[in-house]
Image (cartoon, rainbow, N blue to C red; front, side, top):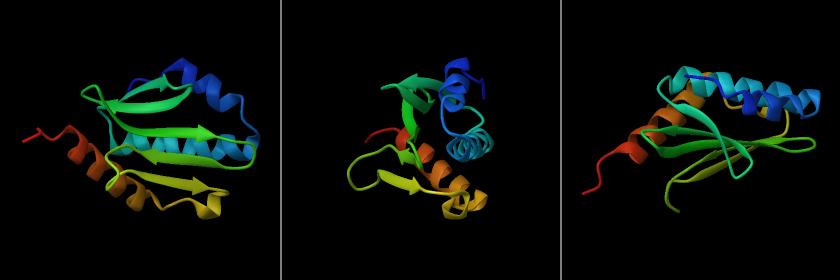
Length: 108
């Protein structure tokens, strides 16, 4: 996955605990979605595959979030207040791979 320097700047602007959480999520996304493009959309980091939004990150004062794109039935918002709240790498990978498959699948 190619890195976007704007995402570097976004993460660097956060408080150190939030930086660590965002960096962890960024690395998990890069591992699970090596073909994803990293960009900034709606002022926050996003990850796209084949031009389709798969996931987005957002940092706040004392927490961060991982948003999984999709329709109302499949979209998810995971709020992470500390590294202890962070889903495991295998869980994150499964969530991201499933989202990629669903979002990039041909529409009937």
